[in-house]
Amino acid sequence: MCRSIKTLRPPVMEQVGDEDIRAAALQYVRKVSGFRAPAAHNRVAFDRAVDAVASATASLLADLEVRGAAPRAGRS
Image (cartoon, rainbow, N blue to C red):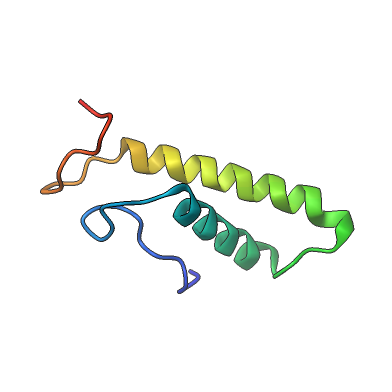
């Protein structure tokens, strides 16, 4: 796994913003694709993958229940 991707769930990080999620998604796609910056003909596929991973990450973090962590805002 890419060592520069941070753990984003509580209690490691209480406040996670869209920038944190997008940065982790970008690092993941870079690692998997082997491209730091894709060529123009791969840009759409690369960006689509980053968007999909960021969306999946946000959903995962919203749905996780971590023992001992305070409930996140917006959850009941």
